Length: 160
Picture 1 (spheres, rainbow, N blue to C red):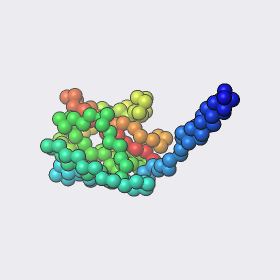
Picture 2: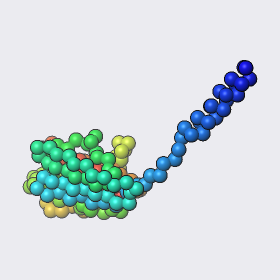
Picture 3: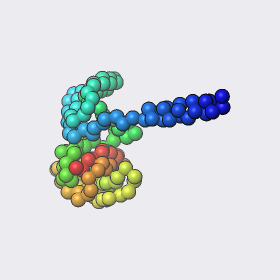
Picture 4: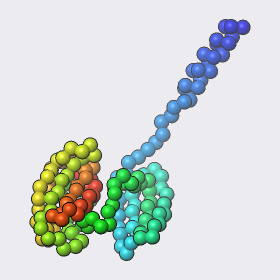
C-alpha cells in the first residue's frame, strides 16, 4: 500500500510540473504613430500578434489606442507646465523641439534613462526650433525641460 501511494504521488508531481509552464508567443511592436488634434488623440502600433482598441474619455480629452500598448501612467502630464513638441520620435538620435508658447529667458534640459542616470544636461535659448543629436545607445530616455520661472515639461524619447 505504501509503495503504491508513493508511486502515485511521484507520478502526480512529474505530470503536474510538465504542464505547469508553457511558452507563449509574443512580439514587440516595430513601429507606430500618434496623432492629436482638438483634444482627440489617436495612437496605433503595428507588428504585433494581437490587435484591439481601447476608448478612454475624460472631460478634456479622448484617446483611442489600437494594438497592444502600455500607457505611461507613471508620468505626470501637467497641463500648466511647459508645453512643447518633440519630433520625430522614435528615431536614431536626432530630435527637434518646438515650443507651443512664447517663452522668455533660457531653458535648462536634462536627458536621463529609466534608472535616473543623467546622460546630457545643458541650457538653450527659447527662440525658434532646437535640434538635438544624442549619440546614445538604443533605448528609451526621459527629456526634462525647465524654464526660468520654474515651469517644467517632460517627455519620453526613444532612440532606435
